[in-house]
Amino acid sequence: MISGFIVKKLKMASIFSTTGRRLAVTTCSCPPLTVTQIKDIKKDGYQAIQFAYGHRHRQKNAVSAKLSHFKLKITPKGFIEFKPISDKLPQIASSVAIDSVFSVGVKITVTGVTKGHGFAGVIKRHGFHRQPGRGESDRGRAPGAIGAQTPGRVIKGKKMPGHYGVIQKTIKNLKIIAIDTDKNMISLAGPLPGHFNSWLILSSQK
Image (cartoon, rainbow, N blue to C red; front, side, top):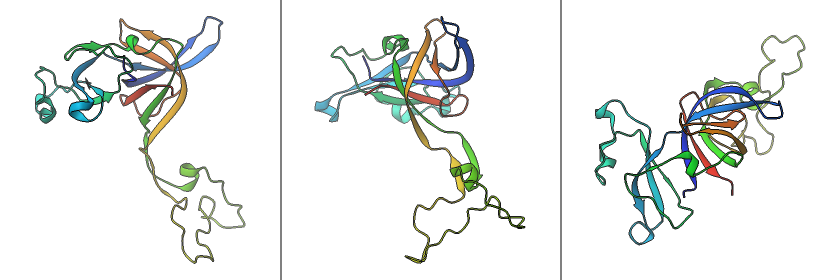
């Protein structure tokens, strides 16, 4: 039906497969998405299906400007678009569940924003090694020389200390371990980017 889905990251857990192997999984909440708009090539210049996800508890925080093009009594956290992969399009105000998009055992791509670690040095940020000590007390975790004789300046893009994290990261070939349609939960193999309650975009493998 559509090329992806958006879920909310929860916590990691351990489950056992049918062969007795222990698997580390990340559980995510995947409530059904509400269709808010269907865009076509003639009117919008491209084809996509717009969905509302999440829920804002306070009405004044709702994105009322984006709610003007449809009349639904919802206060979503945001909107997201996915490309349709079939000719059968859903109706506006209908809901799309996770089991109609993905199935157990399928490998998908997950995109999210990583955790923020504040200001970090080169060892934590880039994986540098410590410098060999010869009596110095404050050079162990330093980056070392950063300049160059030619061109006589610090080259742009040099790995330096700075803000670490809060970047978009994509992980491919993650397997769907389980889908619970009653509790609207999905379990994905391995760790996922982002903090607790962050939103992740699941998309089909290309």
